[in-house]
Length: 226
Image (cartoon, rainbow, N blue to C red; front, side, top):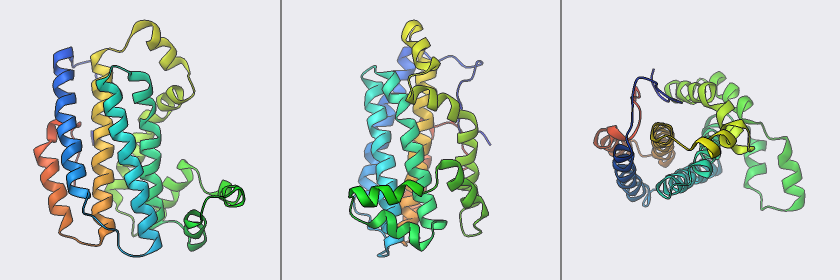
C-alpha cells in the first residue's frame, strides 16, 4: 500500500511541477472546505469532539500548504505532525475513547481540567487502542500506522529543531522533498475529510468525498482508498 512517502529517489520534481502541485492543492483545499462547510456532526458529544479534531487537522493542512507556497518549508513540514495527531485523536475519540475520556475533553479549559487531561493517551497508545477496536475502520487505521512508521522520526526532528531542519537550512529544500510533504499532507487531509463524512451519520456524504478523490488524484501519492 503506497499511502505516504518520505522520498523517492527514482522520481525528480522540478520547481515548475511543484508550483503546479501547489496550485492544484489550493483547488483541492477549497473543494474540501466547500464540502464540509455544511456538515454537522451527529448530535452526541463523542461525535462532536471527533468532528472538532478533524477540523483542527484540516486547519493545520491548509496552513502547511500556504507556508509551502510562501517558501517556508520548515514550519510547513513541522505542521504535518499536529495535522496527523489531530486526525488520530479524532479517530480515537470516535471509536476508542472511554466515556470518561470523552467527558474530560469536553470540559471548559481551566488549570484543573488541563491538569486532569495530562493522563490522556499519546499517539502510539491511541493507535494501539484503535487497532484493538473491531468497529474502527481497519483500512484507515492501517494507513495511519503506516504513516507513523515512515514519517514519525523526521516529523519529530522538524518539531524539535533537530538534524533534519538544521541540515536543510544549510542545503535548502529540494522541490521533491516539498512535493512529497505536500502529497502526504493532502493524503491526511482526505482521510480527515472522510472521517468528517462518517461523523455526520449521513452515508451519502461519502459519495461526495469519493468524487473529490477521483478529481484530485494527482494531489496525493497512490492510496488504496476504500
